[in-house]
Amino acid sequence: MSAASKTSVLPRRVDALKACAQSASYGGVIMPEELPRLSAAVVSIRREVAAKLDFFRDESGYRVMSGELDALVSVECQRCLSAFDYDLHAQMELSIVVSETQLESLPKDSEGWLLEEDGEADLYEAVEEELLLALPIVAYHDQADCLAQGQYSTGDFVEPVAEKKNPFAALGSLKLANKADSKE
Ligand SMILES: [Zn+2]
Image: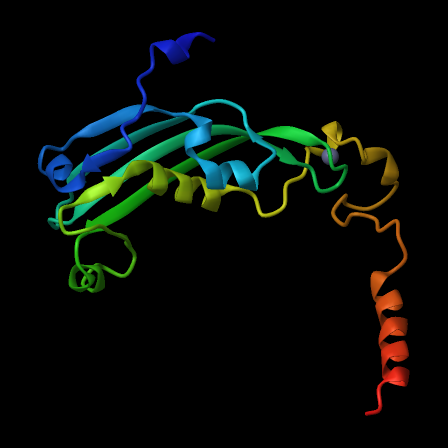
């Protein structure tokens, strides 16, 4: 796809207060190398991350950034240890505040985004944070695609089969050995 050349790059920094006052929207992509924490958390980021971020004031007057994120990352299957592509979608809604007092007065169910007083927002940081939260804690292939499937003859395909002996058994004997050495 050569669509990337037509897609604009999302600005990193915006004046969030002004953006809310103007009900501004930002759409664009973020280059993988701009997201070092996400890069470190996955095998690779497969393409630019697409983001659409809307700034506005909600009906109660709170400043809000609402966003939709779309990424494709490669993660390691924890069953067969091979990498596979994982669609990472996330929706975010942050209430923009510029003081601790404002942060504390937010409704309980809203997530605050505390900015400097001038309202300058780092969009990449917010997007990266949200994508990290959206990552699966443990990633598995679909059963049909998983290289490890042959190893599972029964059951629901949930628990990886430990090939090694129980590591705690070894640990136990180590502990015993240490105990024997110590004078306690
Ligand atoms: Zn697998």
